[in-house]
Length: 323
Image 1: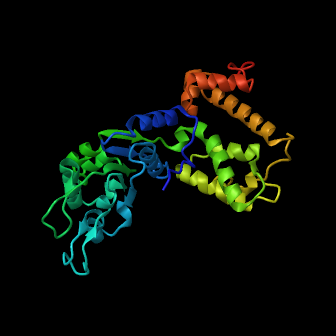
Image 2: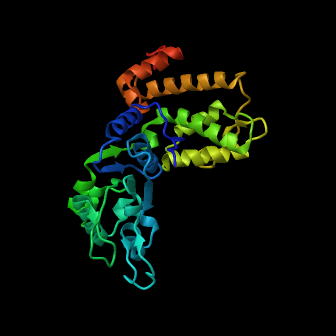
Image 3: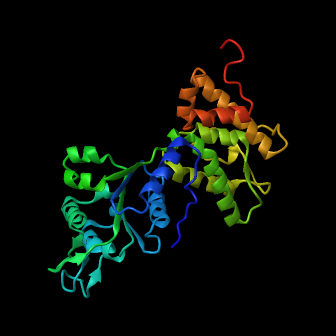
């Protein structure tokens, strides 16, 4: 299937670094480990690495280690032969084999049982596997990408993850920061999700009010991009026929008091959005005592990117008077 980059957009420096790293590694065979909190888009990044590279025409096979019962996991990953266990009525290739010369994506690799970690290590080192109940070996040609929201170094210290496998998996590491640390990505993600879900619902072009957008920026997003995606979809369902999403359409987590917006003071959404950006920049500068480097870091921008925004929206870089 083709890559889907519906949420793989952003303007933050950290996002730009991820894109740059993806371009450098897309054609390599080395294992990749993607780390980050739940909901940051780790599988989406894995798919993009695959579909941007030379393996794009080959399969992308994904499996979540925590979603398959442990007693079935070895057979699902590595396959089995007829008679290997009760119910094994025929030979069956595993998901690693099904990936062929494509990419095998192992999500939540931190949940892989220890006895299967040893088998996975052998597959990575020897580039061959044995199906359950089989004596012959089979060549493995797939590229391995794994992901986890766990701290694998801590899991190694606790004896829950093999150190040799950890170092084998982390030859290339993509560290995906949480959304709260790259707030500059919220607006482009908002625009993309509004477009996707508005079209799917057959609604007229929707828009978020400036107060509603401000609440999106104030929230910590423990569920990251996935939570933002769900919030936007929910708000679009609840908003009226005019397609305007106000604070009252947001979930209680973002709007605990279910406060409604005051009447709009701006004639168009573009004007309201511009005024929000101006207020947001002024607040960020004030929090950082007008230190541009700290402000840029907090917003996930380069200093040059911050200066461009300040100039575009005519925001003074220094306070107008005594604080």
